[in-house]
Length: 170
Image (cartoon, rainbow, N blue to C red; front, side, top):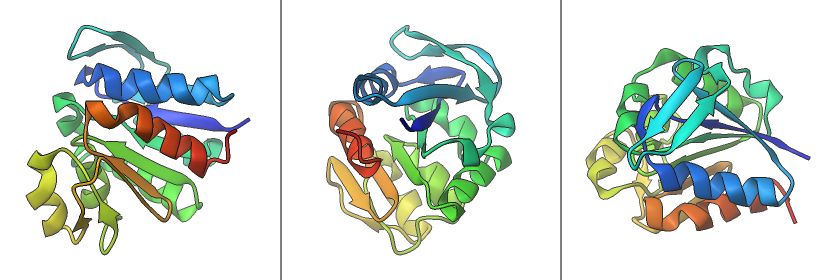
């Protein structure tokens, strides 16, 4: 079964955007590994505690079928993070699924991956994504080749299902 890396902020990640896709993927047989800026306890906006077992800098895209960036206000710490950009670029170069929800698509855009790619995100990211060449759709979930984006917590389950579909999970 596929391994999926979910990247969360150490503080203020959006609980549902982590928990719902994780539950969907694990329920369909995927192994989910969690990374952040550093290993250890991470705290969601609504109080969820998640354990990051490795840092983004130590994560190898080659070990995963998909790399998923979780949103929430804390994700801003990854917008211009060189390790997050390298992870996303390497995952894309290896043909892996690259996904982001809420404000996290800005990580992919700033890594130079979303030019001429149909995307969605939390509305606050519209201008940033368009400025980096992305094609804004505003849909709840958008699948564009190997990229999967979603607009926020209400789309989190469907986001998880889109990732599962891309991975060929039952």
